[in-house]
Length: 313
Image 1 (cartoon, rainbow, N blue to C red):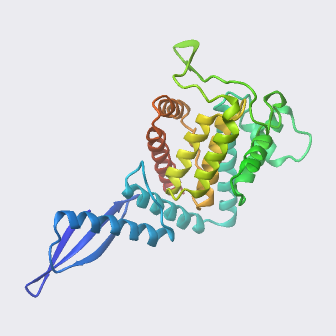
Image 2 (cartoon, one colour):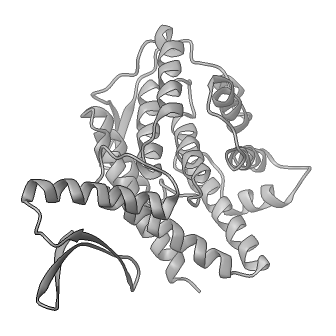
Image 3 (cartoon, rainbow, N blue to C red):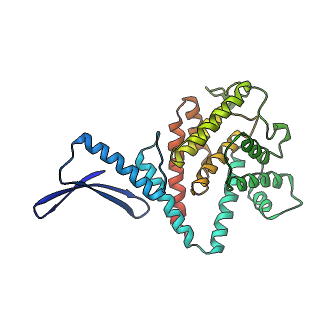
């Protein structure tokens, strides 16, 4: 933020000035401070309140931030507003195409990220067919149903979380869809250079503690006033560390991640589009107990994907 002085009729007037570069343009905000230059300590307080006022003005809500810069809170909302503005210029046909394409791509990516054997044709067929689905199409249809669910208003609680897992994992009966795991699980990494898996330096909690940990997570989620990008990513991080299910945990994390964004009018974000970078950020965050690593990755992906949409057509 800059302190700007305007001299009018031999008298100085001080303003706070903030500018955010978006896509080929910038958005600026200014606020009159007074005729006396504020001291450094006072200026810091003025800057903090000014950012809060801007965030409230452009979003209609009061958000907090812990792991990202307050300027990124504002910038992320400005990007969302640009997305909405461009989306509204599309024809109904174009909107429908965008909605279908983004849903299909997210579904494909979130499945193939976990090495589920489906391809683009399977997901497209699952989207348009109502009956006579192949096994691969049914797996795709289940995930499409889960994406449809997060687009609808649902308060996050245990029942919804179990229902979402049951929908997404309906074709994997041996993985206890919709039920908490009843045994210890271990997390491993596989390097392209080393096919032998290595256990992560983080082990999920014992299954006996899952109900308590989930209740704590849900209480945090429903009371958090974090800005949407940060809340979505921290929710992913926290839920992954709990690892409540035998399988499909990352899939559910990515669904809850996007539910958080969709609830705040942010677009669907394909956070696992860059699979290796996503895994690296996730693994580092849990091994080092550092959610900021995943938050920063999610924020970069958000900016990149929104810029891509704004630059298209």
